[in-house]
Length: 401
Image (cartoon, rainbow, N blue to C red; front, side, top):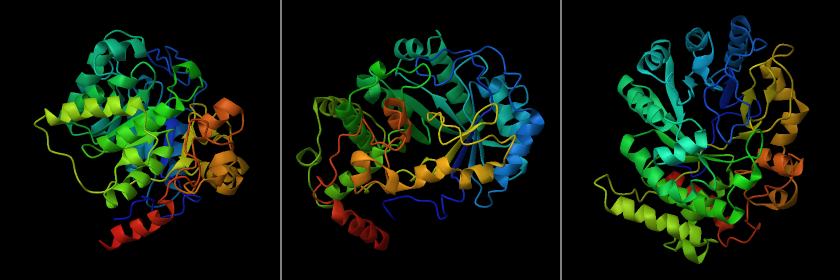
């Protein structure tokens, strides 16, 4: 088993994930939303026929097919969502959707997703109880609707990912949120690290030191459930460093910059897991999440067809109404520059982990105006971890084992 998970193909030629914002219509008003909510579907959005043309373009990337995610807004607010799912599935694309926690998240709609070929959904849960979650989503009842939809999806047979955005509002609730995820069951728990774009504001972010704490906490969580991050790419560095320490029987606190936040999170995690009848943690060395980043294995298409490196990075590389998604992804100067690690600035450019991490290009742009500047919320000083040069050896040893 290799520690660094990478697709068996060139990410410059084919994305691992394609996300299409089918609509911005949504009945929630979340604090962190990158787009303004609107009650109805945008009449200037891609038509059904144009959506099918986009799906044809995604299919033309070749095999293995990219994971195709229909998002929003709330995709259930799109008038043709089930026909689009059917068309994509018939083209051989692995299709997933990310509906919102509203009354539309019901058995009928979830069953129609599955019947038309969807394999999975992702749901957002931002607190372990209705008080925290509903305040964040700004709609009473969203927590219960989300949990009910979660249970229905499992009954129907859809695979499930739970997304949680980390903010100052739920930082110390994360262990209890983990407990909910583990108890109800999900394929993966993905922690989203806030990017100050759209309605999200930098004041709601946690500190860079707490980012490091949460990523180390997530590594501990990954011993119990599948875990990954979105716009928290330095988690891959943390996984490699923690794996190197484990292989040597060394304690993380002696080598990692762990603060009081981490110890509080870890103490609550230990309390939950020690008092649970669930399986004990795995002692297997953990692997990094899949190595993808903005424009490098990842591409986002807006409801009007504009192509972005990420939904959180508002730099437009072209429009699928005018040019093929394949051409934009492979040849756009913007995408090519983001894939070129030699262009990264500051500590990211000097970091020995830039090939597996690369930092959040979205956060760099949001906070500095330069998408290639250093990740502003990473505290790692390049070259400071004593076993960095040996991590490749550890990976090779794991592969032989």
